[in-house]
Length: 361
Image (cartoon, rainbow, N blue to C red; front, side, top):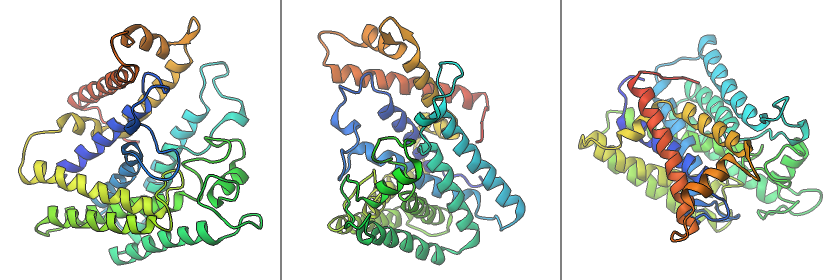
């Protein structure tokens, strides 16, 4: 990307680091509340992480594709990258260390984080090179309002639809009908089919921020902060009729998370790009190989959970023998384990960066 904005790289890397942190506690039975997802409605700091990444995907699209025109070559590159992301996600969902190294078909999860990133990237990138920003605003509004109307007013099996975790929740209903046993939970998937529509809007909102950052406008920090506050207000107002919910990726959730993303990015942009302060380099290293680092962390964590040592796993053995001490609260031990894992991948990203190893997915 030409004319790189340092804050975007830092924000991307920070998001990946946070994704690894919340995904790899020492034990899931002892985790501080901010590092857990909300049970259903509402949100925690952890619920901000994935939408932040989809937001920054959109911002990066605005940088990488600003001079691209619709062509067979461009469409092919976008499609190939999307399929790679989806393929990596399906691999994580299907892989097991037991021969023949593939789960029973009924146990394979089809949706997932990387799959959603791939789908969102595909549609957001295609839209960006075909429509101007005004049209993209219209598409974003249609996605968010349309999703609200679908979720709130389309009956399910003759019953009034609900936003609760129930059989007559339209998003959950469709996931069960389409994916069957291939969902994250028996009754829903947080990266499900219908909720992918508003997740595309998350990326489109990131595109608008990217356009602001690549423009010649002055006072970009104030513009981003103003957008952030406006989105938060609209999101909380919408929450009164369409609750903020990550599992459903509700329209209010999209606005609130994009609002926070704009505020955080405005702050990072002010210090790194305006004031030229040297900070956040460790996260810049992670951002340079974001998908690679995330995939490796997920794959290695999965393997460590399956390698058996006595009556526990390699993951469990390391945690119990190195981090669990009588004088230390278990939640703190669990967090220290997660911080160690994050530190390892930051170091790996640093080595890759210094050796100029950049793996583009």
